[in-house]
Length: 213
Image (cartoon, rainbow, N blue to C red; front, side, top):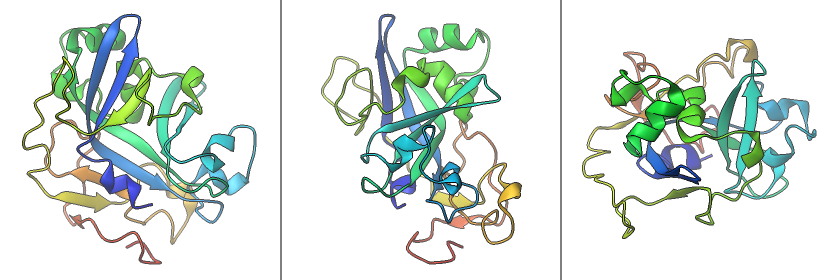
């Protein structure tokens, strides 16, 4: 699950009939396989979770409350469940388009994609992109900042703060040993974080530690 902190500072891009939009990834959460009681994969390989067991670098898009889409990046080898939830973006391209999609014309740029549902609203991501290959550069993709395209983005300094880690959001149901795991990662102090990190948050640990703490 080393992918979760590695995605920070990359940009998530969307190409649609409206044009191109995108933002810098500033917050993620890691979810493991069936052993992770906070993961959808705890139910095993089902029709819903099939993308989690699929090729790495593909999208796993699911609905919460039957209404809002959430975007994950499949993180493990094919056949092994694991995904990274994109929790927040710092919008940097197509801001007017993003505002129209969100229906929030007066909101600050920093909050337009501050939260997993807002990320999908901002970039018009829905279940039609479930299983989509995010490495191909088509429709929806992740890329290194500072590319040579016509919409070259100004990304200098995005990771000037520390990458910090804290407990995942809304997983108290997972119980002791899983709810406390520090598998939520963010760019410290970034205004687009979905929620502040606890004061005790420390720099990101290696995810190879068995307790993940």
